[in-house]
Image (cartoon, rainbow over all chains, first blue to last red):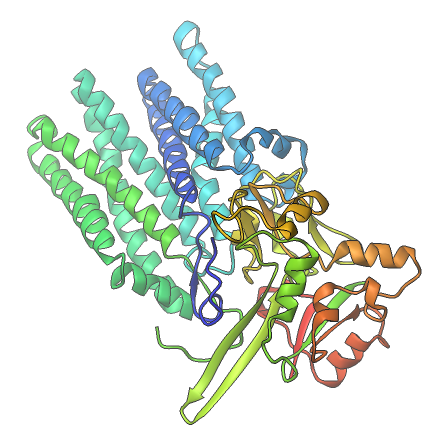
Length: 299
Length: 215
């Protein structure tokens, strides 16, 4: 329920609710899983790793697609998106097309990899759709110009880096499980670069939003110093960034083979938790500008 | 023809008659508001000014909600009215997010009663027959589309004749709300906007709202 108290709702900076509270929580998970799965597929395709491709596809289809459908008020009407011309302007509509094409072409590619010779042009097309699946959530949120925290070009980029980073982490976890150290080293190189990119992007994103507008400032203050600050500093910064960064530095200096596997698993888990927490904060702290003309309020 | 509204803020006394008229007209369930009265204050004691805004869907000419709707459930007519085809809505709530004015509401709890535990009132029972609301879809003000269409069929003029004018406008005891054709330069709303320099909320978003506010 949207709060209806006349002195607060849209008179002060008002947080969005529908995409994070109650069933909205499913959308948070949906964006995470769908981008994580597509990210894993994307990374695995560079190494022709069938297990990675399959697990990524499965996460995207079952967990991502499932939570997306469960979130809808009328899940059985989802087919209406396909028959409408909404794709011309709606990122949700485009996203559904991207996911559908990715899932269908992904199956064809995996089939070819398993039973015949994989076709490179098809792989390129599947990877393009995987990339679009990773990025569409960021664009869908970026289109909402009433929420400055979302209405920035950095958000889709941040989500792409997160999606591929998470995918690479899952890929590393699956590689570690099979004991293919050579492949693990190659994947770990991806993780190093993506983790560094994530740290820089997150910092630039929050700083640019903080100073970009008043509502953006309110959002970032809420994230960094408000009710949700523990989630940022503990889940995102300490567990999601510092711990994986420490493990990355250790494996870089001592070598992946010398790094305890348990520690790598912990770092992967923490990295994914940090990604999930960051997405929660971005959804939870999306504040609208008040609609009434600018009176000054203390927050 | 483009329907629009003018809110005269100095006349508004914040009585919520418009809110209640809207609820009664559309048999709106508990917690669902198509129109709201927002109250803000500025200044410091003893020089405090109270600002009252009667707000509802602005029926923007460049409506973000229409653009983001993945199924085409949110549509815009030629006369500018933005309405929702509930049968097409999947309940993704992207339109709720995209509306910078936050005048859309997602209706999720169809079992909720006005008086919990005491059963449905006659008003609610009749409403479920005359004006059923689907759960799992998004709702908002439709400028009393039924009244306008029925009135036009009878040769009435919306904004002038009561039977063809939105319920909130005719319920306002101080005549703070005005309704009419924005494309007609001689309509009451056009004259008011021109003479009193009507302003719109968040013009910077480029949504071109059809609701103007004047002092």
